[in-house]
Image 1: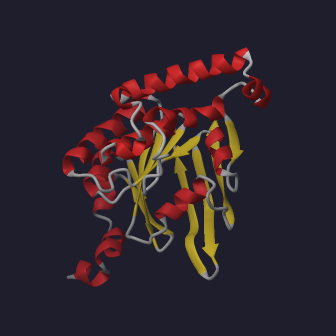
Image 2: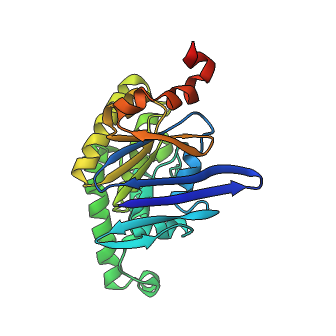
Length: 259
């Protein structure tokens, strides 16, 4: 479903992502790990249009058709079927929970600017439909009772959940989660682990996640890719990655590994 071929991104003399190739299959739950500064978030920024590739291609395959999304603007990447959350929560904090979800849904509205300006019937019909769908989505995640609260007033764990709900509201085929467990306590992490498993099945998604919590990664990911200094150094099942010498050296250092 997602084909990354020889992807490279340089910033001046620094190469943050170097010649990375990956293939993610439909329905997979795949993890990307690596030490701090390995290039993981830069890779996500390339996949979602925040950065343009210096070289290489990113293709999304849907319904038998390949779309080259490398270099597209973020809103066009989202329209193509790829949505994300962020390492640092980026909700519209001064808007309500419900409005955060409705905004994400607006890329799929059928009315045009004149209908919005003159308030034609199809404008109200579409807005009513979006409102109903947004409330249904919040109800699925047991957040409907907080739909009128400002996003900034939610507890940290619920803000993380709301960001996932907002991404799902765009109706993606591929969901990218950038350190979804960051800042969570063990109870919240366990709840999030179950949520990610359920989301993949319930919404028929392909999920790609970056995470430093190795217990979460090893429990839910079917395959794992490992980056170090912007390069792909290993890939495989959790069991294979756990015992991979290059991965151990990247995290602990060669001297520690040899000792």
